[in-house]
Length: 506
Image 1 (cartoon, rainbow, N blue to C red):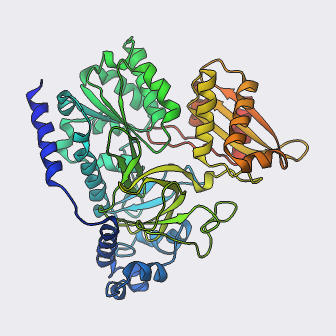
Image 2 (cartoon, one colour):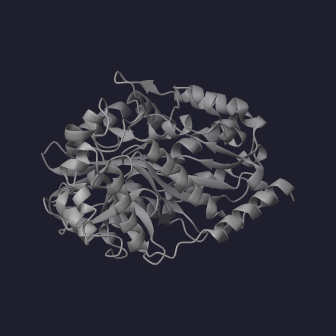
Image 3 (cartoon, rainbow, N blue to C red):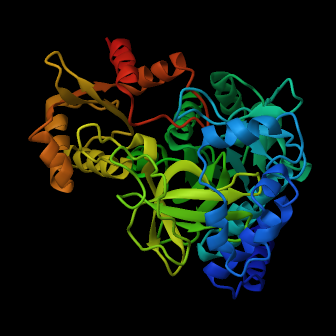
C-alpha cells in the first residue's frame, strides 16, 4: 500500500466530511441567482434589465423571469456578447480574456462564448466537488498517487484582433491550469498545445511508457481511438499492460453505453466509468456514486438553472422554444420528464438556452442525465425521436446481433418519389448485415415509440441503412474538419449533410 496514496485518500475523505450544506436545493439556487445579479448589476445588461431593483424583490426568481427574456445564442450575441469582445462591463464585469469556440454540433459556424475569470474558477470548483465525491468509490490507494490523462482539444489558442484568446473550452481550461497541475496532469501543456489531432496523438503514444496513468477523461470515441494507437504501437494485449493502475474513465458530452463493449475489449480489468456534463457554457454536473452514472447537478457553483418542459408546454412540434414557455425551477421539476436546460452563469449568460435536453432521475439527490439536443430531435414527419430513444434502439439491436456500433448518423431525406425516408449510417468494424440491422432498428423504434410507429404507417415511407468502418468515419470527420479530442459529432443530420456523407461513402 502506497503511503502517499493513503495520505491523499484520507485527506479527501476528511475534506468530504467537513463539507456539507444544510440549505435546500431551492435555497442554494436562489442564493446563486442573487449572487449573479449582485455581481452584474452595474454592467450594461444589468442596468438595462434593472438588476439593482430585482435585488430588492421579495420574489426574486419570479421577478427575474418576468423581467429578463429567454435568449438563444443569436439574440444574446447580436445585442450583447459581440460588444463584449471589444468593450468591458457588457454582460459581466470586466472584459473576458477568452472566448470559447463551440465544437459546432449545432448551427453552421462556431459560436463565441465569453469565458470570464469567475467562470474559469467555477469550473475548477465543480471539479473540486467531483474530487470530494471520490471517497464514495472504493478506489485503491495507488490511484491517488497516479496521473490523470485529459484528452482535450488543443491548448494552442489563437489571438483575436480584439485581444482575447480563442479556442475550445477544454483547451482554454488546460491553458489555465496552475503550474502545480504539472505534477499529475498528462499529456502536459506542450503536447496539449499541438494543434493537429493526429500529431498530438502520436506524441501521446510516444510518451505513454513514461506515465503512470490512473484516470482518463475525454469524449469516448476519441479516447478509444487514442488507446488503440497506444496498444498497437507498443504491441500490447490491453491498455493495462502499460498503465496497470488505470482505474477510472471519466466520460462526457455523449452517451457512453454504445462504447462500453469496445472499452472492455481494450482493458485488462474493469474500469469505473464516471460521467460529466461539461460544455462551453459551464461544468454543470458529475457522477457522484458508484452504483450510477447519472450526474449530480452543481447547484452552488455560479449557475442558476431553469427547466423548460420539452413538450407542448415549452416547445413546438419542431423542438423550438415557444414565445412564452413554462419555465420551472429546481423545486418544481418532476422525475423522468424531458426539459430544455436554461442557464444564467458567471460568464454573463442570462436565461440562455444552450440546446441540451435533460431529465431528472432522482430529485432527492438532484441527479440528471442528458437525453439529447433540441436541434437533434428527429421529427420531420412526426416521428418524435430523441437521441436517447435512438441510442437505446441502436444498443438493443447491437446486443441482439452481438456486434458493436459506437456511432451513427440519421436524417430524414426525400427519395426519388419525393417521399420522406429515414437514412441511417452506422459505424462499426464488425461484419453486419445491413438489412438485418435495419429491420431490427425499425422494429425496436416502433416498439418503443408510438409516434414513430404511426409515422411509419403514413408519411415515413421507408428506412435505409448503410454501414461504414471507423476509419471511413474518421476520414469523413477529417474532411469535414470535425476531428479532435473534444469534438462531438452530430447524430441527427440535415438532409444536405447526410447527402455529403452518402457521397463520401460512395
